[in-house]
Length: 171
Image (cartoon, rainbow, N blue to C red; front, side, top):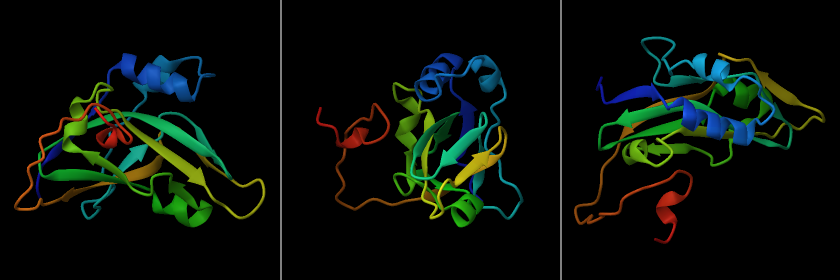
């Protein structure tokens, strides 16, 4: 196995800004931040690192919820972190990432938002009133590190500064 990455918490200031944008009713953001757990593998055979909910989160049928994880990842060049919902959320509740698979590139770490990994999930259950409740500290997504290659004639020299869709924005 290759040791190619390290998880860290983003600063409290970055987390507070992103958290309150999505959960403005939160009274004690510091307590939420202090309870953030770094992603871990459940077993030695697990490929995925579990991402844990920083607070109680409810994924309601037909709605999208953006969860700021409070986590960033320093990743060696040539590797990517792919984010997926935990299989139980998908199988039992039809929860899925809004962008299908989250791609965290190695250069995202130095973005202006500190490389804050945010996970947007929708519940596509078929029964009315369905919701999937995830308690603070429970796993709700998983990340898998994958090595990738580039073409022999690749001459890319762009620099990232942002998250979702930032590499396609015109500069």
